[in-house]
Length: 154
Ligand SMILES: [Zn+2]
Image 1 (cartoon, rainbow, N blue to C red):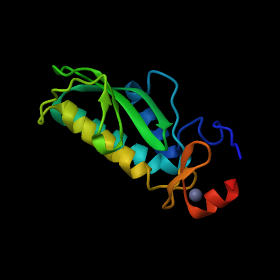
Image 2 (cartoon, rainbow, N blue to C red; image 1 turned 135 degrees about the horizontal axis):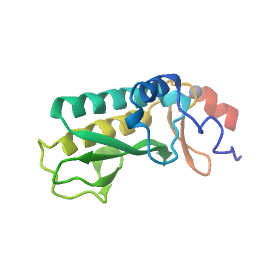
Image 3 (cartoon, helix red, strand yellow; image 1 turned 180 degrees about the vertical axis):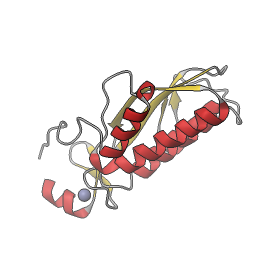
């Protein structure tokens, strides 16, 4: 059974919206979205990244926020670091395409990667529709859903 991707995926939840309203510079530079159930996870990651930027006095910019392979993905740039690059962080921190392989451990980039990875990992355990505990399900593509929302799709 197919469900259109635009279903609940074409905007941000109230917490992320509040963050972007308070910090317009942090709005993603390209089309982005986050499922309603992941609003808490995204908002926490944004707050953590913002705190990191303030504490380390660097500029962090959000390139894009989206769901990919049943994970919340946050694509960012950290300005003012040697590793300054556009990276794509995968769950479990296994791959970071486009990212310098030599990110020093105490760099802002390393801290930012940890924040983004944490959000990605958490999203795999939270229903993207409602925010209740969920697991990754395969409906031709992968989604994270609680039992109730998975039953609705079956
Ligand atoms: Zn649900």
